Length: 248
Image 1: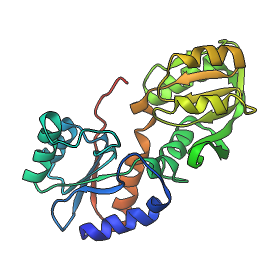
Image 2 (image 1 turned 180 degrees about the vertical axis):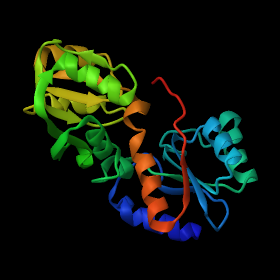
Image 3 (image 1 turned 90 degrees about the horizontal axis):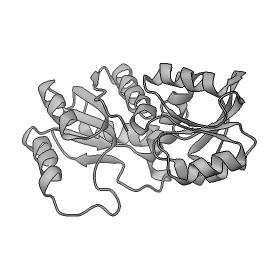
């Protein structure tokens, strides 16, 4: 399909225009006009680009792309290496950040809920990016933490009483620890995100709302993969998802 056709479709699908974001959503580096094979991954690292080149990709779709607010404007060092590889191989780079977090079915929060067996009941926070819901049946915090470790293949950092029953859950994938302040005022038992800051330990103990940091990369693997699968089914594109290890 044509590059512009692909960008237009994803822009409408993810309602890109309605989000205020920290980086541009959509085409970030222009490559060839015709796209037959897409590679998806969480972050547009050099390793992902090199793997995409090896697999003959026409376009790379990521959650974490380039040109972030506050980022240095000069193209040197690692940024030069990444961008030059894309340009030399005529590969398109598409990045979708907050719109991919938020989508009702393909988004990171929706996909994490599906992975963990959570039943969504509502949203909260800035631009309604954070979700809330519940487990079908309550379980202890320790059992829930083990369930997350099994599903995400990564041991989470868990703060709270191990025997505490949990059922009402709030979550926001990635680096959403700042949302814990609002989440702790809601009628929930536990909050899940990817990372933790120092303050969350004290807030978890004092609010008696458990906190789970399950990994930034680990919680955000699934949205971009789901988007790639959707595009492959919709347009007959060849799709390869590359899950490159990241312990953070």
